[in-house]
Amino acid sequence: MPDTSSRTAAPESGTRPASGLLRRALAEARSSRAPGLAPYVPERPFPWSGAGMPLAGDEARPGAGPGVRGRAVIDLDRVLRLSLAAPAGTPGRLRPVPSAGALHPVRAHLLIGPGCSLPPGRYAYDPRAHRAHRRGPAPDGVSPGVLVVLTVAASRTVAHYGHRAWPLLLLDTGHAAATLALAGPPAADVLVCFDADAALLSAAAGLHAAPGRPDTRPGAEPELPLAAVRLTPTGVTADAPGTLTAWAGPIRAGTPSARPGAETAAPTELAAARHLLHHIARAPELPGGTWHPAPRPEPVTDGALEKRRSAPPDDLTHPPGEYLLARLLTTARTARPDGPAWTAAVGGDAPALYAKAPGSRGLDVRASGDARPTLARWAAGQQWIGGAGAVLLAHGCPGDAPAAAVRTCHLAAGYAAGAVQAHATALGLRSRPIGSWQRADLGAALGEAPGRDWIVHGLAVGAPPPPGRAAPGFVRHPPTAERPAASTPPASTPPATTAPGSAPPASTTPRATATTPPAPEARLPTPPAPTPPATATTTPAAPATPPGEEERP
Image (tube, rainbow, N blue to C red; front, side):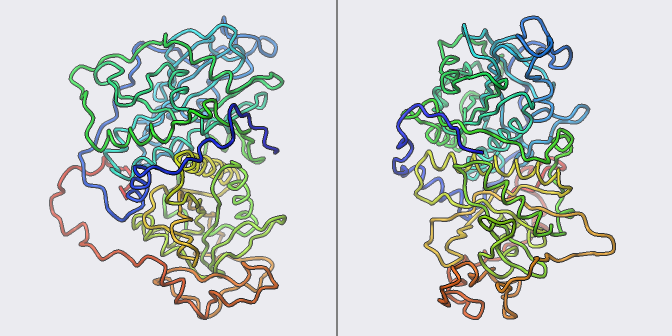
């Protein structure tokens, strides 16, 4: 689909060099230093008082605006139920939208115009109760549709992941944006923005802009806006940046309810994460942002969105076929034009790093050898990754990338992974996102310049096991000359040697063939020194995680 993005300022915005603060924070998040143990932080009550408005029911509410045969074009009950809502009758921890540690820090503010199933106005969405809390009126003459501002409440994620939390908050927001975009009704056009100015997003959502200011009543956590999704009835011409600006008038929205006795001063690590995200999300040169269309992959249906879940590792050991893997890589690559590159690591009969072949339905070999054991070490030691059927990798984001590029790359990586996860579900595959990566300099591992091509996000994908086969291998069709030689390094060694087939056929430079692995291997990070097993400690220093929550990397 051609890029029909909207711009409101010069294209050079966001190209300023990275600040020292950002470079240090990015290096620290990618380092092997583990977060310190902290007591489990329970989820805060929903901060907006009142019973809220139910989203289910008659789509033609009074004041809902014109629709088709008296029904609203954009059914917010359906959109939110297929995207952000906690499943009814469950504790709400496991939801269709993925989240690091199942902590779900992303909040949604609904800026509703005519043509929707709720009357125009500004609302806060409660995903547990699946209700909308009205916070204020809509501006006069606001365009039809709904604008969703996505914010994060960072405290629980920072308490769980420490200095690694802020990239995960960006990834979580990207996943939430993908679920909203995919849930858009067929009669609506969907646009997604990852670079609007945080101050403008805050004003549009009726929130104060400064994260460190005690802008709300005690116990109501500051929210940091990071992205926006726009759903407009098809055929309606609406300027998305202009709509955002129209909502950003004087703050006349309701404030969160007080929580007596709750903390009012943030711990140092939490304050630092909030400050960093606020710094990253500043875009005064391009306040209205760049808006890209969000097509839904063809086989994805409402049923696939309802069934989408993060699969347990034991269900991810069987590799998908080459054709399905190529389709998923195409979805990942085309989900966002401003997103990172995507590569897939596969074991089985033809272990290699694969990329989508331009102009064809097949795959190109980027490097031969089994990279999955090294990926397991890089992904906070999650050993199950070494046996995953396939691991899709979003990579890029140099260590000195400017703030706008760091923000967009992480948001787009989460967004693309969310789109691929829905596509995989529609194809009958299982998947599980992998958010936390340490020392994962993929470019340096392949003999390229260090510090330029880091793994940002991952998605493990597995196929259902064929009848009678316990561990099917990955089979490429047709077979190619890039097959790894018999001297492919064993799984216990760093992964890959650059494949001859990844260069143009006319080149015969033996720069990093399977018979000369020392150069790329020397650039790979060595495995971390062995640490005492968890059983060596009889009493934990602090409560780790609640029962059932995924292991903290």
